[in-house]
Image (cartoon, rainbow, N blue to C red; front, top):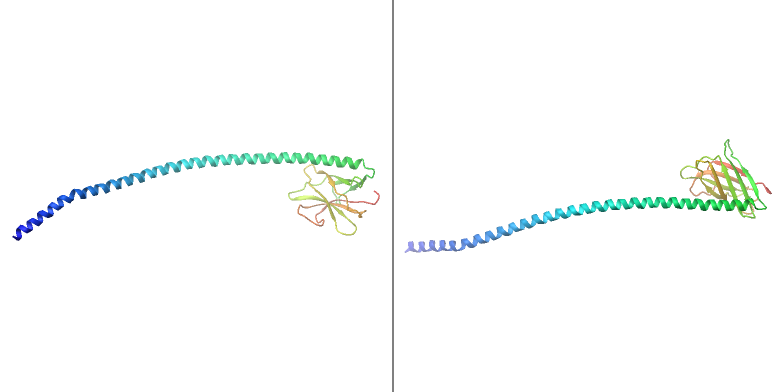
Length: 220
């Protein structure tokens, strides 16, 4: 009796295993297929990502080259604009100098003053001025070229009181300059005019070395 029951259980177990085996195998195959698809999708995504990265890299390289070329063009245009503006400024300055000089030369109260260096030097200058024309003009030659951040600064120096700034100018390799100059303040009839070489920064007093100096006597 017991032997028959054991045989029956074994047969039942075998039958169950035979029934569930194919289903288990199907599930395993399904998961293997899903895993394979996931791997394939991952590989495909990686390939697409690499291609997109290459395309973006090429695009970025092209855009960088384009931007660099445009920047070069902009710099060139800025330089050209600067040159044109300087030329226009020089022409305007020449016109202003010419008009001022003509106004002074034909003024009835034209006065001239010779400027000389305080030390041994080949520099010299002539100041022409007219109170009726409310203008003055300096012509200087033999001056050393002004360096970087340096200017020649013209001062009216009264007998009493503080010096008064009149104009700034630069000197190039030709060592000469023609500069409109503000007249000395009214009430200072016999001032000294000094031209100093100093830093272009603002200054209230002449502190650089004196390049030219002249004394304006009353009535001259």
